[in-house]
Amino acid sequence: MSTTGETTKRPGKAPAGERVADWADGRLGVYTLAKANMRKIFPDHWSFMLGEVCLYSFIIIILTGVYLTLFFHPSMAEVTYHGAYVPMQGVHMSEAYASTLDISFDVRGGLLMRQIHHWAALVFLVGMFVHMMRVFFTGAFRKPREINWLFGFLLLVLGMFTGFTGYSLPDDLLSGTGLRFMEGAILSIPVVGTYIAMFLFGGEFPGTEIIPRFFVIHVLLLPGIMLGLVVAHLILVFYHKHTQFAGPGRTEKNVVGMPLLPVYMGKAGGFFFLVFGIISVIAATVTINPIWVLGPYRPDQVSTNAQPDWYMGFSEGLIRAMPGWEIVLPGGYTLALGVLIPLMIFPLVLAAIAVYPFVEAWVTGDKREHHILDRPRNAPTRTAFGAAWIALYFVCLVGGGNDLWATHFHLSINAITWFVRIGFFVVPVLTFIVTKRICLGLQRRDREKVLHGRESGIIKRLPHGEFIEVHEPLSQEQLHTLTAHEQYKPLEIGPEVDENGVTRKVGPVQKLRARLSRGYYGEGNQIPKPTPEEYKELTSGHGH
Ligand code: HEM
Ligand code: HEM
Image 1 (cartoon, rainbow, N blue to C red):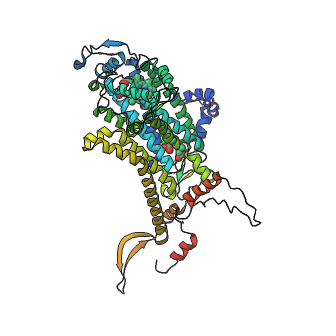
Image 2 (cartoon, rainbow, N blue to C red):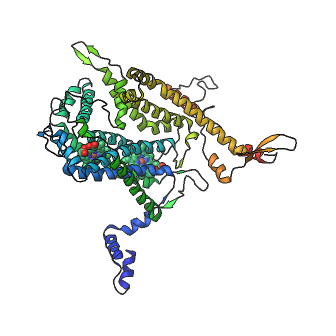
Image 3 (spheres, protein in one colour):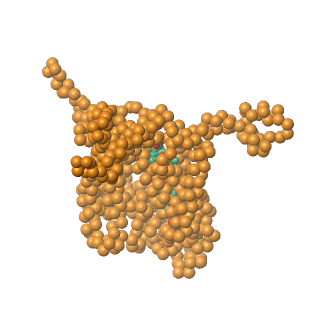
């Protein structure tokens, strides 16, 4: 485009790089694209790296997954093992298990690739979890980012199931136990459960179909959908521009930070290798999923200490803690509530995350765009909900690993089960209350700091003998940051009877909304931030 004219005028040939760029520009319009985006500004904060951790671990998973696919045989045909691992010589097993043993002991770099793949999957899911928390606690999900929140939520759920299908592939005793767990859960669904299980397994459990089917789902279907979603997710991050924390010069209309090229790209590139390097070091030194210790899957056996990967532990905990209730309906039909209820709670807990942005927008009635992030303390109710959700998740996780807690800490398994049963209801409520109080306490401290300055730790003795602590005034920058947040007023529904005695109908939904709004922003649920008048009065002399 623009440079083509210049290059024809210049004697001799343009440098090779320029010619390639011109060639590409003629076909793809890269100059216009680059001009518009190369100087795009990204704000800086350590927590904005978490999305990158997800992205880079996802790339690492794909790279190592392709390598594993070259050697893995997704077949349940029976073979006799004759590979390098001597203790298994002559053992009957599925081809899937035998090929995973081969990957571990005979394929060059195979074990390292398996370990990187598995560790990267764990890091990927931790990354998504923590990234989601960052977005949640800072309110980055608010308008216009609700759809991107939903894309992210889908990525989290799909990531969990991709992981599950992945660790089911080697057909070892642990993965088979996980599949049995899944079959049991499906069978508990009334009316259609048996049909779905038969359809999925291609007949009775375990059959010979499930591994080949999971293979296609694992290497093609789910990662394909996820790849599309990741691209859409990043396009939306680009399109909306990144959020930023409050600070001097930062408004809802600008972004203060570094340009994409060269600064951000340089940092991002380096960070990719850092993530890759750290995962590789862990994978090279810490064993994960040693399938040779567990042996091939046999439906009549179960491995002790059978644990799912951490992200599935929460669903396992729900099942382990649930009493084994069963109802036999007339006609001899059994309703396995002990499995069905946890199976229903599992998506409900996840769905609570998906819908949260819409619930909060409904409670606040706020239709404006938000590009400045909240400090978690300034949204105490939201922060408390988030903390309660995490607490619930961890209580269930304890339930999922009840056998490990029992053996490692010499506890009774029944005591742990009862802890989880009671904790499921009590711990989130306590967490909610405590978190909210902490947030309000921090708000009070911020108020104090703004009005009275920072406690310097310097004690002075006045001429008349009194001791005082010197308070240092905050800088303008700090004052701005501590007072930049907005404080909503709770929603009022007004009197139900007007001045003429006419009753106005106020529906239960409106009443609920007003109650929730008071819970978020009513008296005692946020500490009023200092007004300029208060600040002036306190700081205009009088020895402060
Ligand atoms: C494959 C998984 C994911 C990848 C690769 C990914 C990647 C990213 C990246 C690179 C950013 C910009 C940097 C940052 O803010 O950290 C971002 C922002 C964002 N992500 Fe994700 N993310 C993933 C999963 C999720 C999940 C699970 C959620 C929430 C449920 C989510 C919600 C968001 C939102 C709302 C933003 C915009 C935040 C802002 O502008 O402040 N993402 N994501
Ligand atoms: C988000 C995406 C993915 C996650 C979370 C994931 C996770 C996993 C996990 C945890 C395992 C068990 C590893 C083990 O200990 O043996 C596994 C196995 C496997 N994965 Fe993935 N994976 C993902 C994507 C992919 C992709 C894109 C491919 C191929 C292109 C792939 C190919 C394989 C193969 C062939 C196996 C079986 C071999 C083995 O178990 O070592 N995976 N995956």
